[in-house]
Amino acid sequence: MGSALRTIPGLLLGLTVFLLAGTAFAEDELSAGDTAWMMTSSALVLMMTLPGLALFYGGLVRSKNILSILMQCLLSAGLMSVLWIVAGYSLAFSGEGQFVGNLDKFMLAGITPESLWGTIPEYVFVIFQSMFAVITPALMIGAFAERMRFGPYLLFISLWLFVVYVPLAHMVWGGGFLAGLGAMDFAGGLVVHMSSGFSALAAALFLGKRRGFGKDPMPPHNLPLTLIGAALLWVGWFGFNAGSALAADGTAGLAFLTTNTATAAAVLGWIAIEWLHRGKPTVLGGATAAVAGLVAITPACAYVTPGGALLIGFGAAAFCYLAVTVLKPLAGYDDSLDVFGVHGVGGMWGAIATGLFIADFALPEGVSWGAQVAIQLQSVVFVALFAPLATLAILFALKAVFGDLRVEEEDEYKGLDLATHSESAYVE
Image (tube, rainbow, N blue to C red):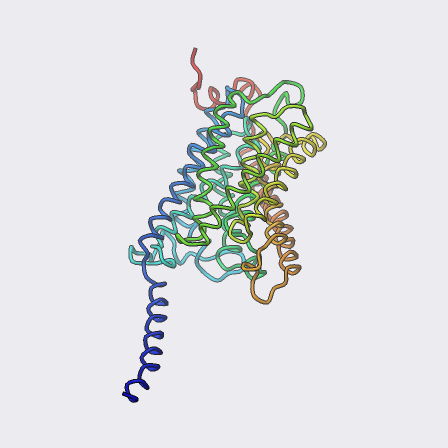
């Protein structure tokens, strides 16, 4: 009897080791639940571009240009998806370079249906990340809407993917420079929104103002479309943020909750500010606010509590509202659909707020709160300089080869739907 009792601790120890080993082994196995969630998330992120962003931007432009916006979003989805498979994914997520990866996975070489990225097939990770590559260049469309030639636009976003987006994706998510610095960007405040927002401002300044800007009225032609687009973006963003957990787990649940919380706070905050400032709340303001809140919570969604998300949402309302209604008129630039004011400023605020409101459970071991705030500020400065400077280099190179990147004056007045695509959205 005593001998049997003495064996019990050993059996318990052995059972514990077995269970822990089994758990560790399971972490390297395919998870059907995680895979299903990530495939769903990928579809949700695609919905953000088509039809979400297309309708959001399409309703904001004048009726003579809506098809050009829809076409630009459509071609972003097609072109970026192809380029991502050919070389974008490899350059972003293979190799150990500080600023860009390598071509070891050119055309997805070496990846098979059995290849895993954590608990999901690597093919699923590839398609999830490709949806980010699709929407990021498309976000810039709004800044230079109604005035860029279609051919140069396709060349611009192709070059921009490899010169700006891919290096930033590698630097933040592929183990490069900004990751080594300690920058925290869960779902793309730096990589997606700051990069596109600051690049969009550079492109708007390079191309110049729309003809008649500041003189002729240029109101949105269809706000119901814009609100529908914003609603689709709100829903799709759950895949964008919660999907970035790459698993159906508590982190994804937190990201899901904070995403909705910050967005709701931004809508309430913006409407309150607009009501006080202009006397009436507007649908345009509410739709813009929703996107601003979504942008701002993106880098922080898995690193803050719901209370922190509220503060980030209210901050996004204040900062983005000021950027759109005060900064833009003062500076006089023609950011047609407020890409910089929402994505540039919102992404910057979100990246900084990630450090300001980071929860104790998310703070890296050995890093103080102040140190993380400083790291976030450094990463913001880096992206704010790198993205627009690289964008200007691309635009100057394209102009040197192809001449003026703007449409002809007559075509601009006629509208890009007819001038570029020989079609009209509204036939009487």
